[in-house]
Amino acid sequence: MSLANPEFARFFAIHEHFERFLMTWVGLVFVFLLASSSKLASYILPIFPALAALIGLHLAGDGASRRIKWHALPAIIIGATGLFLVPSVTRFASERIPLVLDEAYQPWLYGGAATLLLGRLAAFWLGRQGHTVAAVFALAFGGLAFGQGILLGHDNIGTINSAHDVAAAIGSQVAPEIPFFSVSTYDQSLQFYLERTTTMVAYRDELSFGISHEADKFIPDIAGLERAWIAAPAA
Image (cartoon, rainbow, N blue to C red; front, side, top):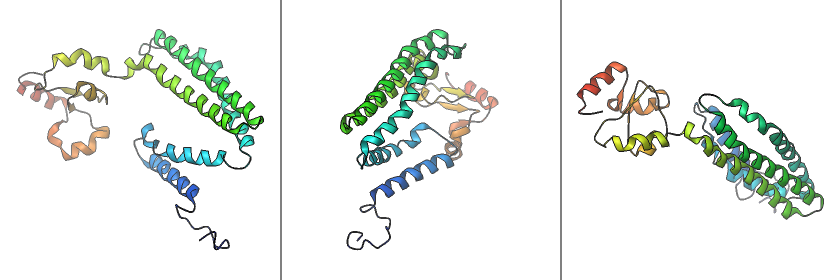
C-alpha cells in the first residue's frame, strides 16, 4: 500500500512497519514491568529479541560505521570505570558476605570489565576503518563476555543467596511423608532443590493470591504451627 501510494500516511502494520511494531512491543513490556508490583529481572526477557532486531536494523542502515563508533564510546567509559572500581568491591564485605568471597569474585569482574573495554576499543577502531561486520562482532563479543563474566563469577557468592547447600544438608533427613514448615520466610529456591512442597507459616507477600484460593495449605500464625506440629507424626 505504501509503495503504491507514497502519499498515504504510514499506518501501523506489522508487515509494512516492522520497526514500529517492535518498538511498541518493547514499550508495552516495559510499561507492564513498571506497573507490576513485583519487579523481577526475568520479566523483561521478552524485550530482548525485539531490541536485538531493532539494533540490527539500526546498525545495518546508512552510516553504520559512524554509528558503531558512537555506540562503542559509552561502553569504553563503562569498562574503564569498572576496572577502576573493582578493587573497591572488598569494601562491601560483611558477616553475611565474607571478604574471601568478594576476593574470589574480583578476578571475574576484572576479566569482564577488561573484555568489555577491549571489545569496545576494537569496535571503535574497526568502525573508523569501515569494517562494519567486524566492528559489530567486537561489540557483541565484548558485551557477551562482560555479562557472562559477571554472572559466572557470582557463583562464588551463590552459597549466600541460594538454598542449594541447605537443601543438600537436610534433604536426606526429611522423608516425603514428613511435613516441612517454612516459618515467616520464603526462599524461592528451597522447594526446587528439595524437590517437594513446603507449608508456609505466617508469610504471605507474593503468595497471597495462591493462599486465597488454597487457604487450607497455609498456616497463618505460630499458634497454628504449634497445633500442626503436635498433630503431625513427625516434622
